[in-house]
Image (cartoon, rainbow, N blue to C red; front, side):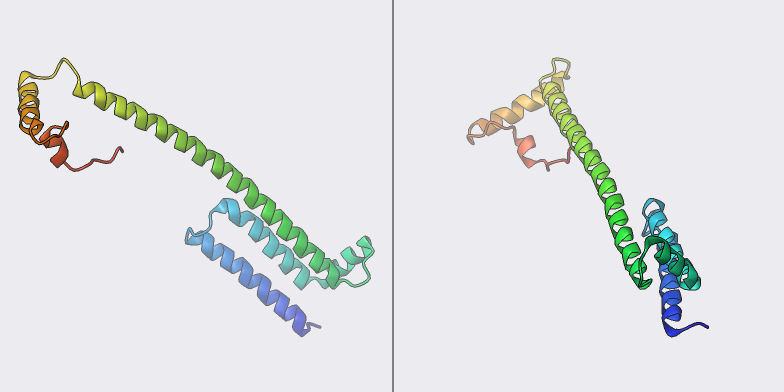
Length: 158
């Protein structure tokens, strides 16, 4: 006979399983994270449907009160989930550090290229004349930058 506690356990495990599947379907939870949660929901579902599994495991472990096996299972599930997330966060941190280093290198290379381009001997005579004209106009104002550089908006590096 099914008692009230077994109905609650069935309901909770089914809701957990459906919630995880829905989150995966909506792409709110990627498959990498969802696998562990689906396994947990199926384990709870199996234990709530077949109570004798819980009693057999309790006897095998030498536990006299079978619901304690559920508590032990939940603790193990919590630690496994925490460890899995720690591994994933560590991998992401390494990727972020690598991307930060690559961005810094690319930014430095871009600054060097812009500096070389502004002092390039291959510029057209009209560009040099335009630059000289702007530089002459701004010397009286006490500025070292040509007027066109001060008035142009800053462009993002990427």
